[in-house]
Structures are given as C-alpha cells and as structure tokens.
Image (cartoon, rainbow, N blue to C red; front, side):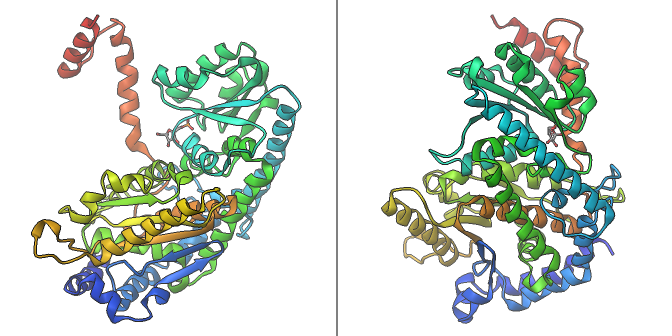
Length: 504
Ligand code: F6P
C-alpha cells in the first residue's frame, strides 16, 4: 500500500478534530496535561497542545503498529542496509551504545570504542603542549553537530581548549576565525567524511598555511587514504566509517571538538544520554515511545492537517544553534520526493524547518505565528534548571516560554478584528531538567529517531542526499569561467559572469 493510502484514516480524523477548537479539546479532557506527556530520563515532553484528541492519537498509534515501526527500528540498530540507495547501514546508535545483538552492530560498537581511546590520546597530547585554541574545519554534518554541542555545553569557565569553527567557503569566515588567534598556540582539525569537500579543502589549506607547522594538524575522515595523501600522517588521522551518515556523526571522532571543549568525560556523558534515549526508543511500545509520538505528530501536522512548515524555538541561549542543526538533520534526511524503491512519493514529505531562540524571536517573527494566515506547528525547547547566575532572568525566560505555548493554543477574542488571536496554533514542549551533556544527547537522539520514523511513514531513504550534488558539480564547472577560462553553457549564468567580471 502506498503511503498516501495509509494516511487516509488520519485525514478523516483531522477533518473531525478540526471542528473542535484546540482550547476546547484541552478544556474537555481534564487529564490531558498528564495523558499527553511522557518523560524519558532528563527529558519531559508535552504534546497536550497538539491539535488532536485521544481518538486521533490512537489512529497515529494504529498506523505506527501497522508499519511495524519497532521492527524498522531493530533493522536500523542491527546494521541492516537501511540506506538502500547506497547499500549501507546507518549505525549511529552503535557509536554510543551496544543495544543490538547483531554482529555488525557489535563490531561497529567495538570500533567506536577503540576510536574513543584515540580521541583521549589526542586530547592528552594537545594538553601537554602550548595549545590553547582549536580551529575545527568542516561543513554540514562535519560541523553542525559539534558546533551545536560546543556552543551549548562549554560554559564560560569549563574546558581546557577554546574551540572555533570554520565552515563557510567565504574567505571572510577564515579571516574572522583566525583573527586574534596565535598560530603557535593553535591546533587544527580537518573534519570531512569524504575528504573531498571543496569548502573544507580550501579552508584547510588556509589554516595549514596560517599554522605554518603541520605537526598540530589532525584529520577525521572515512577516507583515510585521501587524508594521508593530503600529507597528514596516520597517527594524526582518526577514522570514521561509511556506516555513519555525516549528519549523524557527532557521536564519532567527528565529535572531537566537543571532547576538546568539554572534556572526554563530558563527551561520553553526551553519548550516554543518547544511548539512554536509544534504549527507550528501541524497547518501548508505540503508545509509550517518545520518538513515535514525536514522529507521528509531525506526520499528523504534515499529512493529515497539510501544514507546510515547522518551527523550532529553543528558549535557552545556549541552544540557539539547534534550529541550524535540525535543518540539516531533518531537511537533508527527509527532503525527498522518491520512495526507497524509486517511485514518486504519494504524499507530502518534509515541511520547511526553521526557527530561532526565544525570547529574541518573539520580537521578530512571532507576530506571524500568532496572527499570520499559515498555521505553523512549533517545537518549544526549555530548560528547567539553569546554572546562569541571574535567577530572575531565568524565571522571565520560562514565563515567556509558557506564555507563548498557551497564547498560541488558546488565542483570545476581541471586538476589534486587529486584536483577535485566533489560537489553535499547535506546539510540542520539550523540557530538559538541565542543559547537561546527557540531556543534550537525549534530545538530539530523539530528533534522529523521529526523523527515521517519519522516513518509514513516507517510504523514503533518510540517509542519502543526492539533492546536494548537482549544485556542487555546476559550481566546479563554473569555477574556471570566473577567472576567464572558458565560458558557462547557460546563457543567464554567462551574462552574470560577464557582469561579475566587469565590476571593478
Ligand atoms: O551537504 C552535503 C554533504 O555531503 C553533507 O551530507 C555532509 O555532511 C557535508 O556535505 C560534508 O561532507 P564531508 O564530511 O564529506 O566533508
């Protein structure tokens, strides 16, 4: 059965529930706050403000059972080639735990543990020398996860090293990152699964020349040969593997910047938090499974209600990069319109994911969330306990977080049409006890599993990204034309290049 046919009971439920305002759904069910919430370790999740009732939610669970999502999760964890177009496993779960009894997963886990020992050795070697700063060069999956975790977890005083990230091919990025750093006290990491990414190779070259001394340059790559060909000796190359997708790789040696910033114990706590979420997701029935709730809520909003975008709104400054991270995780994984076996997908797939931190964004785009014509489901992320010294600010932050969830859902009537808040704007609240490595690990793993389960519903491959290749190929063809060697084939591009070359 194609995905669309399976979704039709959900559409019927959505049509029924649409007639009941969200505030009435909440008022009519006194146990809703508890009945629509789940706790997994340090993470509490409330779905009470999603626009569904118990019957509609049961339809979501029925679909999850029909698709046998637990078997699909076992296939993922067991190292089956779930990345069908590339014939590969996606064993990010083996990087942080040993939950599957499959020999493939066990072997992968063993390799991950061995590489962690090498990470420790690198950190110790760097700590023994004059290095105070690390520049991590990488892009996409070789950048966004470490960047998020380092930004979220390195408090003002923690960590032996200051870690800086360089991703954009724009030379201003290199200029900004390197300004103020001392080459004699800096080490470089070149992180690239393929070791063939233009941006990383160009920035790597800049960094290498700036360092002037190769002895503090390390590589992390699945293409150890290419890294060696670049001149990095084997003892300074840490491996990763084809069986880890780039955007799922922060748990491997790609996470070395995290370990350098917060220490290896902190990095392992991040892995433990993810493993705790993995165990929950792999072993819980759909009705008590947080990833199933999250994924099937996304499907509800996208396919049953037809909503076209999804906001992610961290109410914690330290999580300001979460929207950027999730944009790659979700949209590179689920931005597909062909099924795993090559047919056109019969239903809508990924909505546009976007967002930014509260409370800042309340003063930018929240007007549209409250009164715009598009309904945008929101994931709010909050942190209950803070270690920031300003307690009153934290209470203010939390009051804003709670207020936004409530105001969006309930709305407010007015005689003045300009002052009407329609309400009915759904949200999920994900609340971390505290922003610890463990809690962040659990949060990110939750999103990873949610993405995989959405791909199961839509029958697409969450682990390839052919869509990004064409632009890279065209850019490579156009590069010589920008310095006057040859001409672009496309007439519009040709005219634009002439224009660019004419600017003095
Ligand atoms: O953007 C495309 C992509 O292939 C991502 O999937 C990947 O994370 C990124 O480029 C970087 O690739 P690499 O780690 O091979 O340099």
